[in-house]
Image (cartoon, rainbow, N blue to C red; front, side):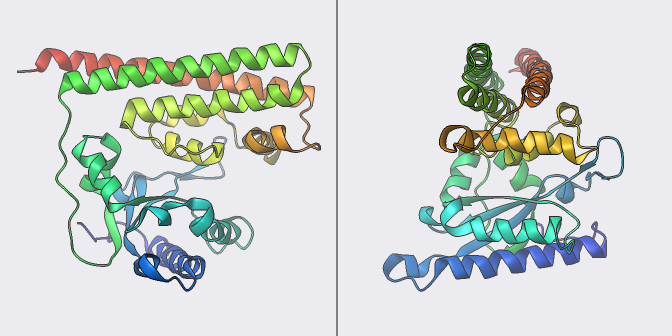
Length: 308
């Protein structure tokens, strides 16, 4: 696997070094003093993928869009248990967020996912674009050994179209259902349920576009994490959530928090102004997701005519 970072400025390479250091420190701390099979648990690879791997990153925090590309990292571990984000990686994520948003030691947001080597190789064997792109363009920042990922087995054009269409029908339909449930709950002043279902509508829209475009989604309920994943696919998705003021980003984060707090906190509230704004932005997100998915499906369908 490629290990060359010469296309990155020196400050970006230093930031990546710092991120890797934090990941290992917090993993070792979370791993504790294991016994038995857990004693052999370790990180096998850390791979940079996405815009910073391909050289197509965007850094425009002071523009109206306020968008900055993330460092996208795939952490490959040797045991399924170690992919538990809450158990093993929560503190690492917290430390990285503090260094990014409070201490300003990191100027680039960081987004990471964790999988076992078997999961990654299974994704390649099933022709999932997400893992195929990483195998092709990814840059190894750390490797416990020089073992290569398995050779990808791309789907036929018909298989690719059928899978993408199935994902679109399932997840866009579920997003519409959540949106309708939100409207019913809001109309009947069931505000906690309204907030929860509005969050579900946005979450399912992100699942939809990730699955249609890459045949992969991290099944996370963290809306900010899903937004980061999806916005790598098209800059049009950035338009759904303006980030030019803290107030607007705070509203998005309130929608993110609704997954847990709307159901479990007696103190969670959304104002009518917040409901109106967030409902409008989810509607815009849905329009963009639908348009992008229809374009992708048309592209895949056009490819059916080129089959041997």
